[in-house]
Length: 348
Image (spheres, rainbow, N blue to C red):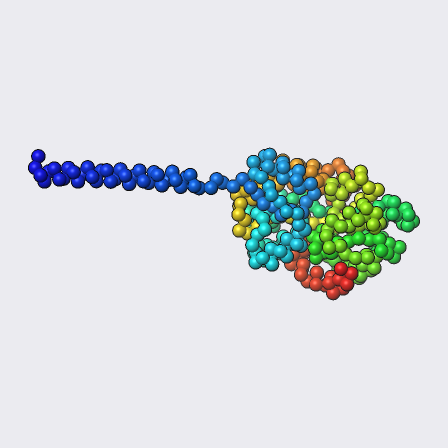
């Protein structure tokens, strides 16, 4: 073999060795990347305002394997905090609470659009036309009374909104601040829409004379009425509060002259860290199975027509729901709450 031929052979061998080493390095890098890549998250962070939420989240985890971490917070607080933090989400999913805050959050660019695979089963009046929020159930507003306090004071149980402003209930009616409580903002907006601005504000001016103060937390009126600190509370009528009947001398009533209502909201925050898990929760909560589980955990009227009204709410009639425009809840929220502060806010 010539020297030139030997050199060529050596060069070929060296080249093959170098190529082999390069390929091995690629495999090594690939294996190393796979080894260091974090596993897909099986966690979902939720900010919630819903009864028996632990039971609901446990069922979701059982069905999906996704663990839920949650923070309990009213809808007005969620909106205010998210805005104050420049839109930085405090969680992946927002579950429960007054729809006015969800509509406002959509308009402020704080939510993520998601068209759920269950959307066809949800009536249009209970979801956003652009798929930024969905209703889960209907929050209906009514009265909780303490039978012992009413008896002591010789008072009948109020059955209508008109009854509630009667001077005989002075100091005995508890209502949460509507700028904090989505339920009570819904009550405020529904009555204003039903009665009209002039008559509506006249009504609340008269009603406020019977209210010693407006609670800073939505859960205060039912808690204080159950404890005997007041005779009547304006509350969301749900299984969570029906359950108090076994622990305290309380009764619940749907107002005979109209039931304020609003869907309990469900949405995904913009820039959610666990987006796919958030989508999975929305689909589950709107599914027939999820709706049934949620209804059993906290009996309410659900948004899916194929999920029956809970037996515990046998006195509920859809015909008594006030006729309202949900978009007004969000569009007029600031103006309505400013008017509340100006006309009624001295008691807050």
